[in-house]
Image (cartoon, rainbow, N blue to C red; front, side, top):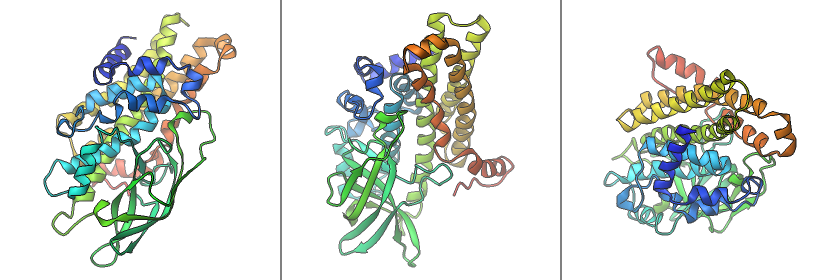
Length: 379
């Protein structure tokens, strides 16, 4: 399919050989628990896609990033979903690093090591609950000498078994004693950090979405990013950047899975010309919305306006992608379904987009109010 081939070419430009290496693994193994697919992603330099050039990465813009994610989602929906958590964390941290004084020297040193050491970051935000703000802390932080003691759990936590670093949202006491949002950078080998089985579905099993528990994990103050009197908007800026990138990237990965099914329908000439066109129109229109939002962000759209636009694109896309994937499965036919579960699993891999926060029902009121002139409040 032309547009998917174009996305693959963009992916190959940033990560030569990645798609071929993934496709060399049989689909059932590629998407299964214990799959080597995430290791393949890291071996091909995948961690550096959004890392700025001055830190050794590719510094891909939003348009190229969603195209790479689409190509990756077509090859492995699990990997696309899993590495979104790395990429959106990268987008937040390096956005702060672009301005002098917003990160500590130790934090900057860590960011300089991400590409050379191929450090995969898992996201310990509260992302597993559809109606929950992804920045609501799921980990309790107790102030202790020199830093904080963390207790809590993130489930599911993608990349749980391959991560070198966990980024966890925590609540820390502010100047007046009230809790404030902060971000803890926790090494995966920190004493007290453990990984436990959690994901029970075959769909997206290779994303390594397990439970990560933190039991009395010490994090030095130098590895906690919070607000200061001199920089009171640091975490607000981080949250905004995180939501924008997360919604674009997670949606683009699912768009890739739907596009892979549409491509099969075209290649096999299934159904009538009208039915094939319906499949393509659904898959293409969904990605066009996402790419349009990415282009607007690339060209300077920011803040609440950008958040609103990417959410509109995401919610419209998830409907179109689901319809396109289901129609593709129908057209591929019963014999295809009987002979292999691969395409049924690929179609099922499109649906979980609805489960990522913020869920549509939670965001409907704030979005309607925003377009009627109010501020956008997703908390």
